[in-house]
Length: 248
Image (tube, rainbow, N blue to C red; front, side, top):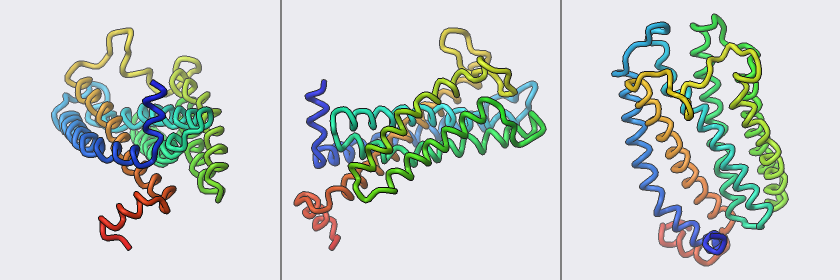
């Protein structure tokens, strides 16, 4: 496995692989998010307690769950970069960070929008909301560290350490509703138990969660390719690529 991983540490090979995967990820993400959003926002039944206001769940839950998944992917990449000194892993972590930050921001905004009619306020210092806000600050911290140093090796090391340390916040977000008294509702989707949602609501939600995950992959691939070009601008293959694309 590690031999296979090291083979894609080569920037040119990683760039080409990302280019091959990008159209597939983009098409699948567009298809799944399109189906899940239209189904959930227009055709899913009305909730008997919350009415149509619950439909924000089809955006909020995918954004919130994938904000955590993106963080774990970023931290895993940073760990690989620190331990095995694979630069492509550092570039991947740098590519994921802004994507995860935007998803976390969307989760917070949609959560506040949903909370206003349900709780009567836009924001409470609830354990789930507060830990999700901390996640946004962690993302912003990683992004800032990547940009703070001219030495990108040092920048990747500092940002990677913060990303790895910040993993401790993920289980806090996940289990905050169970560990503390919380206004936030319990988990909508349960793996070991039967879900409380009817299939007419659950199916589009699951489609959107998977679609958001694939969308993260697609956007990350675009940013990853840009990171490779930025870090390898003087390489002959990059110069040849620029000539082929008509860039001077």
